[in-house]
Amino acid sequence: MNGMKLSTQKSPYYTVISICVALILLTASFDIVANVDLFGFNLRACQFLSLILIALLIIECLKRPIRVPIGGKYLIAWIAIQFLFIFRSLNFANALGYFMWLIFDVFLIFGIVQYVGRAFSLKWLLRVYFKSFVWIAVFGLVQFSLFAVGINLFVVQHWTARFARINGFCYEPSYFSTYLLPGFVIFAYLFEKKNSDILSLKEIKIGLLIISVALILSTSRMGWLMMILWIAIRIIIYLAQFVRSGISKKKIKTFFALILLMSLLIIGFVYILTSKELNFLLNGLGIAGTANHSSGPRINALITCLQIFRESPIFGVSLGGVDAQVAQFNNIEYVTGNNGSGTSIIGELLVANGIIGLIPFVAYMIKIIFGDHKSRSVYNSQVVKALRWGLVFELAILCFNQNILRVYLWSLIAVLSATEFSLNLEVKQKGRE
Image (cartoon, rainbow, N blue to C red):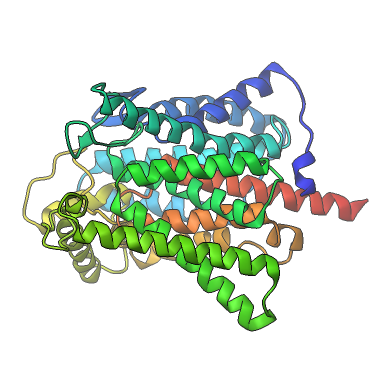
């Protein structure tokens, strides 16, 4: 992967930028530490750091043209529509706050794309990003171990007096699993392909093990489901390859390893279903005789959003206007900052965008996920494919959670955009030689 060799210039200015980017990627999941309440909104450490990056990016604009990331025109169009929809919100303050949050996320994309190959190399960026998942997962394992001996390190939920549902620095375990999931997918894909462009195979194996254990110990059922879904998809892909091009020794080993892993996971799930001691792990899902206090409200909230969208399908109310709209629909009073009633980004995006806003948003996501097939080096890059798979699974798990503006989602988009931009730039430079 020749794009890993992009050179950088050494200067205090670029050093500050590199430190900011590294800390933003590392603290992207920090919900309950290193943040402050500002006018009812929770301002995170990564957003403080983004302010520095934004200021430096503005200075950079005065010196050289801004690099436009892949799908940038659709992204800008979507932002413009979101701004206009602020004025349709039932609560202007909340809508404005969410719009500023969106601006922070988008500036992160433009900033990382602008500085890759200048302040830092692409390989440095990818190594920091990949390892950030491992570092946070390690913290989660420490959190789990300490709770077992009576030390509570930011644990917010637990099953028993000694069995924690680890949440890292997130609000709750489901947020922690949502953060870690792209890391699991990326490491699993690179391990499957034996790709060592960014990390050594030893680092990939250890990282995958640590992230997998942390995901399992979060006891987030959606996290578990997504892990199983990943394995199932890989098995289906290998079956399709066998039918199309025959069986190779390398592929058959991977295929049977995936089958074995899937079998173990199914056995484990059946054991939990039938075990009285572990049946509590299913509590809230409404299966095996457990209550549905987790799945029930999510489904009801999604139905509510679909009903609101049906009543007003053309124009949205902005991302920050969804909760006030839901409150009005349910005939209850909305309080600024009391957000999360949508519980699914599907419902939230429908209500926030309407058809007009969905068009550029969907176009942007398609461009990000499928990229530009004209550049074969980008299209065939295993690292790019790993990032894209990570993004697909992150969006999938968010379909069962609220808030499309989570910083770690946009960090992933930013890193993917920077990777594609760098590889495309290298292709163009080679074409001029």
